[in-house]
Figure 1 (cartoon, one colour):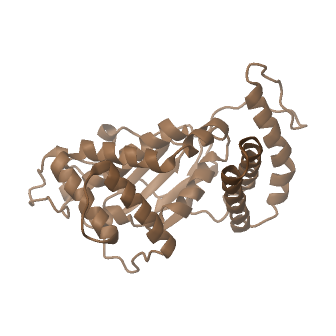
Figure 2 (tube, rainbow, N blue to C red):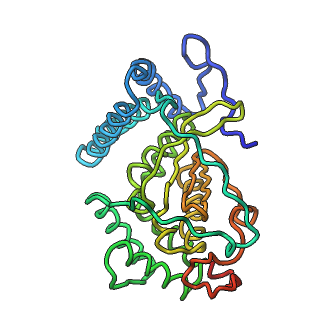
Length: 326
């Protein structure tokens, strides 16, 4: 059983810290500031519906970014930090009411070629202009990291570039290009987040909420879900990709595992300081994300069998394609 919640020192009833660690004055200052902001704010936020809390939190985050960009460094950094703390304080009071349960683990197959294709999509994902803009930024960065450029427009063009990269340079290069792309796009945000927020109980739920806001352009519709703790209680931090656009468009297990799963899990662990487990279901096209949960190594994950999916463009029908391609 995976322990999602680390044992934390008990606090007195007054809500004050037990001790002050003089070795880390900056950390104590951050915790004190968070306590001053969060205690009254989170208590009152419990009276608000989750969607309102999330909307207000997004506004505080947007204000934080504007302050950080437009104001002088000293003043801007303080305002940036305060607004982000308010944002996280709002989300830390969010209950799990209304969250869907997490998906069960996928069925285990001995070979990927045995996995049936998902049923046809009844209501395909329709990207918004915001999604189109994010896709353009992502694809441009991906092209600069890989050097592979297709004349095909939009999402289909990106999938064509990924297949070209996989077939000409292998999935290990695909993984490296994906890691460099995420690092280039994220900039200093993971460092800032890791420095101040990674130890907070609300961190998994916060990351899931922002992933749901910014990643539909790449993976399609998503639903926030719960996670189960060691004691059996439910908490936020789960995110279900209902029908992954990349898996749907590529039909490729190699692109799913090496362009998305493995580098993204490593990226969150190393850059954000938060483990992430991604559990693709090749039979349904869904993927369950669990923030704050340590992932299995790819070689130990029985839900990702060897071989090639029957719908993969490089599958000759034998299911014995070279492992370096899938």
